[in-house]
Image (tube, helix red, strand yellow):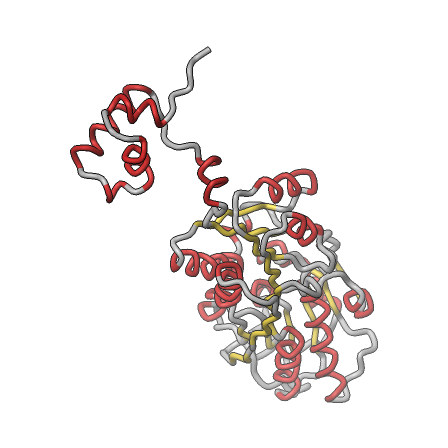
Length: 356
């Protein structure tokens, strides 16, 4: 059996104390160049790869890294524009603290428990949309600080939330003030189980996803305030993917004659609505107004530029990370949203106006 080479062996071979050898690997700036090179040569000759990181972590009691957990596949962190902004906000604060960030996928029930339990981190930021999500419970079991984003994890925990209900109220009110009365609504999947198609308001109001519940509540409140009947409200659930949402938006436009506006629960769904309208020969905003939610970078670059509800996505990540690095009493922070009016919304067309 091959003998394990230890730091003491390297120190002896290089003719230095074990403390000096340790500084070469952990605090090289404290060691003269000549001594450092001699220790490194001895380490290479003996096959010593450096201090055991697990042992170092045990001694320090700190990893200096944040775990970002999401109930999505790993590709989501890189492909989704919302996730990229959120991750960038977390990374900014990690950079300020000279810390790292570990992406912890939680899509698979089988592997999520192992991923969370074995992650070498000082705390978790959990991004999940469903009440009582299993990822919250897994993070709680680690007895490390954790912050939830877009979900209130309950008493004694910290959460970063945005004004989803107010934002949706602003969106619907904007369309109503432009004279729209026949409005279709596009929702992200309310149960996270890819059940797409027509739904009624009661289903979303009772769903496990706080974001969808709150946004629907805001839409409905604005409609009620303007005396618009909520009976038979056209609501379509579609995948939050621009191409994947197209057939569902097309179905909405086809089966709801006379619709003049669409309110979407995300910018991606809103841009899918613009694509579907154009494919049917409808002009945006002359024939159909479209409003989104989030204000991802693609919203301003859309054709036409998208009217939307802006939420501080990167700031959510920054706030959550600061709560890990600068812990205190658990608290909930509610971030403001605002209406950003661009070119995808206009006054409702006159009933006599003929669509192209």
